[in-house]
Length: 339
View 1: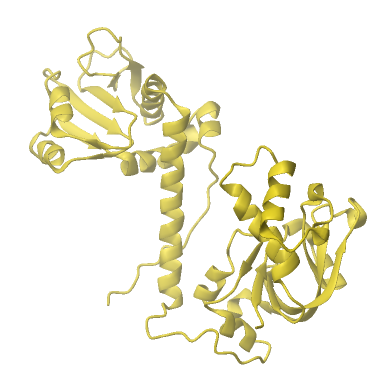
View 2: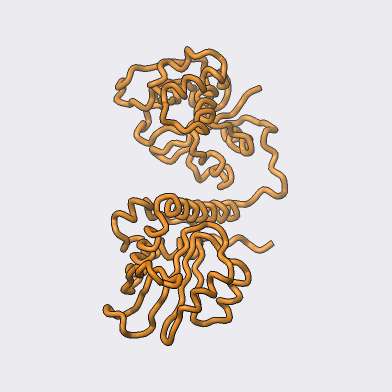
């Protein structure tokens, strides 16, 4: 059976693979990967021995990619290469040529192991549906193209029944909307995990105080003795004499906060004081009902906290930006049409 493979290569390879007729992988530390036996376990053993710092769960994944490149790919299989260099989609077929080039040859150390390709044609990305582009947008070096194989092969005059879209196939706007939503959710998940794993409970209080200062408040972490559940004190004037005074409780946990904890914070409030509860997790329905009925109480969950961090990221200290490394990008703001 003829397979259709997708391949990713570094942007700096430029047009070399297209001019010289190949696609490549690195892994030069493994020696000549084409000489490894047709045995997945042998690849796992080689990967684990060569990269001892690689997490155990990543070993079979990495070994699978290298194994497919050396043994699963066959001459005559189709290859789709979305070039990062010029943003075009290149389609060709594999030949039976395999080689390992010396490090530094062509000045491209990333291209150690190569498989020959007869390139058929190159297309602009705009020639393909967003759903098809999404499928070849994988971060994996080598992957199977299945769902939209027919769309890609049709561009080079090949008919196949490998991809038969049904009536539920999303249109471009729907796919774009879903990809944008996925990007936002991935960012939120990343930020929460970084804070949870990188900060202790006290560090999270310091982080919260810093975030409030980025928002224009004066804030300080409270004394640990007899704080009554108040971790941070924030106010609008520098000395803290003028209301409103904001008492903040911080919970560095990803679970659910109940109504008793929120009520405890309310019990610390005096005249001109407001309560702010911040957690990496969520709140129970009774806690949210309490917030709704008490104008002095505000509950910030993990999703809302990440939004505040993103809004104030540029004002945060270098140490916190290192803890949560982000770069600003724009994603399409497409509203999915109502059904």
